[in-house]
Image (cartoon, rainbow, N blue to C red):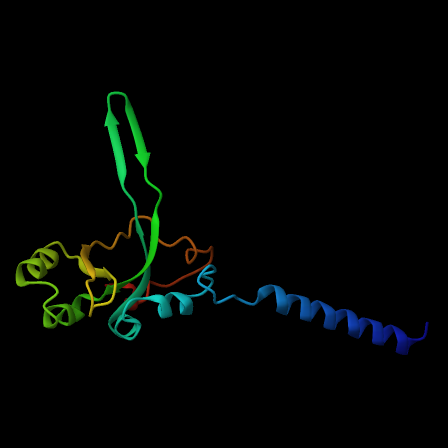
Length: 156
């Protein structure tokens, strides 16, 4: 084996590794595989409104049953669906469409919450006053050595 053959084989080996990594790391954009923020953004109800005035979300609906004698906790199978969380200063979108009234806005504002919804705004959306829970934090961004405060865009 001469140096030319070794160089050719090494080049083919490196190219093979690169192609293999390329095939294994591509994201599938099918509904069965939610692998990126873009898929969630496109699936959100009123995607343009959601991205511009809030943030798209994955909404999990489930019920919890608690028995006291004997003490047990039962949880239903969760239902996952696309949703949207609006920033506090963009509630006028919901008020303009008469989807929330003044009492609901005041109740939500008094508790320092915001609104989230599932379903298209033109149809029959389910709108809830939701609370931003910061107790757990995001363990993906709290890596050792990371510094700096959370971005202001995380505040709703």
